[in-house]
Length: 212
Ligand SMILES: CC(C)(COP(=O)(O)OP(=O)(O)OC[C@H]1O[C@@H](n2cnc3c(N)ncnc32)[C@H](O)[C@@H]1OP(=O)(O)O)[C@@H](O)C(=O)NCCC(=O)NCCS
Image (tube, rainbow, N blue to C red; front, side, top):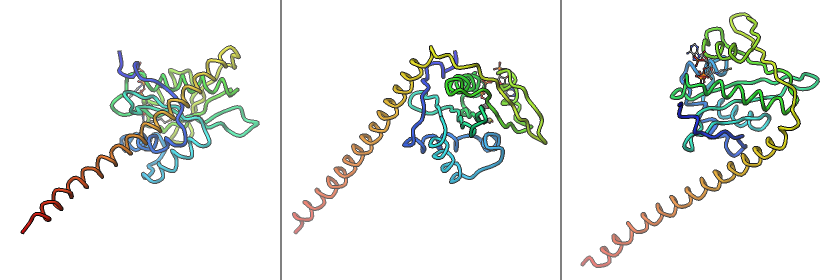
């Protein structure tokens, strides 16, 4: 059974933009080109991560506290009932079905938002994403050297709304917990560092005081 099956999925929040950017930066150069239909530098990825979380729905897969996969869903302005989607999976976890799980989750979130179709831009040489989109039932059109894939989204089932609300609340709690844990860790590390450096100065000062 792939490792990610014991991972958990949750939405990312604005204070987690650095984590999302670190995940995107960890793609291989080829993966980064496929993900962004062109090569982007680290600073642009950082700005992209922050903006995507601000304006869209970004959901991540966490394994042992590490973000190993994510999808971004950016809803197109009305009257379009579509959304742009892009996926990324940490290279160490490719070919284990995580990409397929992410597209299924993107579809399910889109359904809750009343979206009728997911749109994906796929580079012509991205065999993994093209195969994945095909398996997800996408209709695929060639656009120059690239592909435009459209995945149909089922209508909203109102019975799923309470569960989705609960999941969103759980995401928020987990996100806040992770924020507080990070702050607590940094504060303990600072205290230990300060203690170590004042402790290191102390004996020196003491010895200096004893020196003839
Ligand atoms: C595309 C990507 C998300 C796929 O993630 P993944 O977790 O490896 O995908 P899955 O394991 O769910 O694979 C789904 C299907 O895609 C196909 N596939 C996966 N990798 C493939 C490859 N290298 N070549 C051909 N087909 C491949 C297979 O049909 C696979 O089904 P199978 O497991 O039954 O063989 C991942 O490769 C990635 O992050 N790439 C870099 C970023 C990117 O290209 N994003 C897409 C931008 S829209």
